[in-house]
Image (cartoon, rainbow, N blue to C red; front, side, top):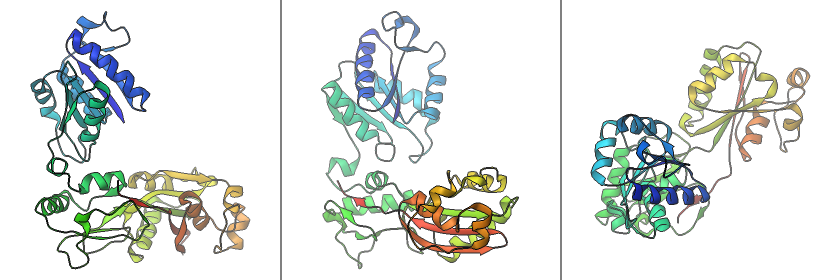
Length: 341
């Protein structure tokens, strides 16, 4: 997590300096900021000599966590113009100058504010102040669990409905196609008859699904294929196989396709990074694949899309090679597990 720590006084600066240093040792990317009047006291501190509102706006864009050393009122006033939605806002934590309390102020669950507050409190020897209801009552928190497992929420509304039901003592159903590590919480013992369900998977459904971003789409194409042509067929395959595009983690292909503008443009539009492999790397992938002498002659490997998808996923082939008008598509799914802490 990239964090920004800011203080407003000399005593706050000493605390911030210690905090940022320890956070960096723990694997965070923490940058310590102070006001110009304290620059001489903290030579390694980044100095901000413009308006604090501008500083806050920039940090909302480039940081996952903001830590204010000072009064809650200062933090609230500074972040207020930039707060948008809990799915995008960074975690905001406020610690007092003595380090007695670390308050999770914003994005406690999805943004990781509660976890960050606990870490700050541990470093400073203080007390984390957590006010989210599920944490206070020691109940299962669906959004924290989903984030920890890399699952996409069906919607914030549905997540809130589940949390409200959990707090009311209602049992939630749970179904998952993957191996589960840890103990499934008692709150999720409602079974198939439960009114609300947590269903994990990669397929579209009329029911809310917590999507696992564990799919890799392998794509091959003739030289010069347009973005529109690649998009039309890739989306057709996903639709016909009832797979959610949001569950795709990345795309994969052979390295000689690096210059294919249509392929690169489509994957960029989808937000999919592209993994490129050499023919030798693809040939080394074990498994039974749909061989093509023509593809072997032109690329040096008998199949691009299937082998690339399996190589990038380190998993199993879910959809074998589909072909149409110079575009080939295959889908693989990584071997994954679901965890309960």
